Image (cartoon, rainbow, N blue to C red; front, side, top):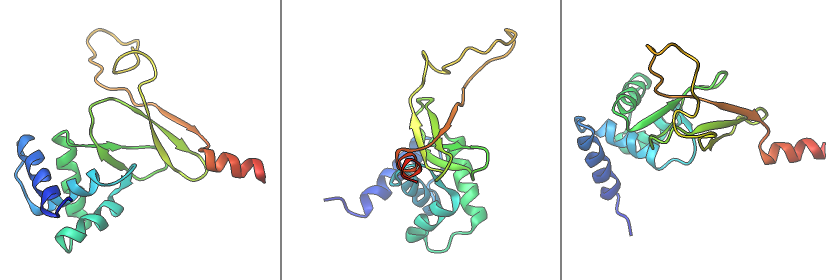
Length: 149
């Protein structure tokens, strides 16, 4: 059985390992991201973190998410037409599928070869560190409802 202290202790350990100062806001936000399925926006993560911290301003939410992202603990995904979404950083350079109808986001493994998955044709002075690919289409539920219509 997991106690409420265990996720907090784990979050504190992860923050310390990343060289970050441990605060209640950072622990609560890291727990919210860790315990969340999928890709959540800042408002949803703020609501979840407030269950632990009480009041948490939107500015503090963005500050904490930025610090966690900069420390390599959280990945921020920016998809055109959608608010930034956050997930635990696995350092796997995966990509995303976005449903055009419902907006659901799903992880997609690296499509070709090793990270960064693509070799851009750039002069040798450029250092490519990451490739972000977004696949667009319909998820199974939306595809099925479109066929039924």
